[in-house]
Image (cartoon, rainbow, N blue to C red; front, side, top):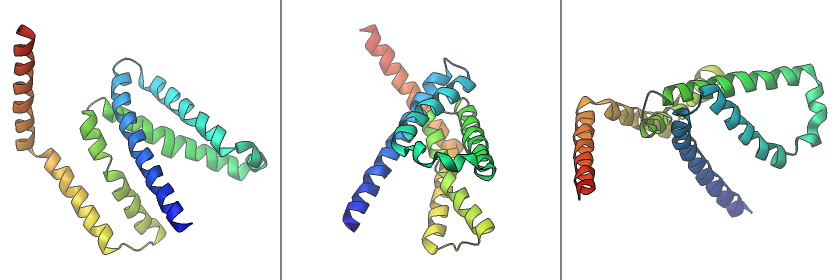
Length: 167
């Protein structure tokens, strides 16, 4: 049964990665056509439908009747969901989809640091090494030399496309 959980975790992780990649690419595409609030609305709507089906919320509907739970759900809907995704989509309109995905890798670093600072959780050596590697990757992304190489490569590709189109 432990191996079944590990396999389920692996498949869930792969599905999460695929979903995130689709969200980044589709998000960039639809932001060029629709307003940010429209993209957020439909993203949350179509994200909520499977949750409503799979989560079976009617089994625990009585929990929603308490004010304490309702306020917490409202907070979760507004701050980590609406605000975070709203800011993410805003940022996506300024940067390339690939860079946005790479910058998204900084999210677990922030979450772990907040858990350390606010919840007194311990930082392991592996986590610290991971932080360093993520930060190093972000610094490499921001290097001006890398951008010059990318620009040169893009121009070469454009020239080859133009050459092919001329045939």
